[in-house]
Amino acid sequence: VTLSSAPVVDQGAGGTGAWRTDLRRGLTPAFAVINLTAPTTGEIVAADGTRKIKVLSYVVVAGVASNLTWKSSSVALSGAMPLALNGGIAAAPIAPGAGHWIETSVNGNLNLTVTGAGAIAGHLSYVYEV
Image: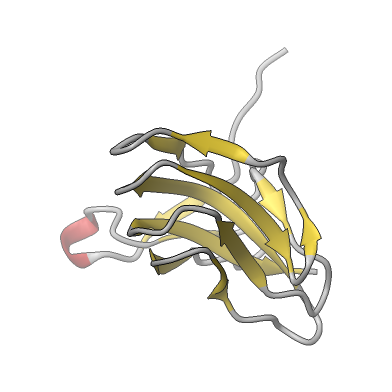
């Protein structure tokens, strides 16, 4: 059995793959910055009234020991992930249409709850999809 990924096209300058679009479903990844301090729940990606947020990749680094929990608004999408001082976690990129790491409910914000009193930084890629 041969498996293949969704057909894609480069949309970046000079075909560098800066943006890739899934031609079957018209999905172009978007990107968000993670920059939180103090124990808090921060909105990383705003809700869409008719679609889910599907996370394709993420990288998070903790400037302080902390637990991280991904949430769809207030509902946990992950368990509390403990990070040590200067520790990090990464979820490798997945092509749109090939899968995703986590997803919110329709009209749910993608939030990140952190417990440590210090800087939490990173970035993620995502798509909005029904």
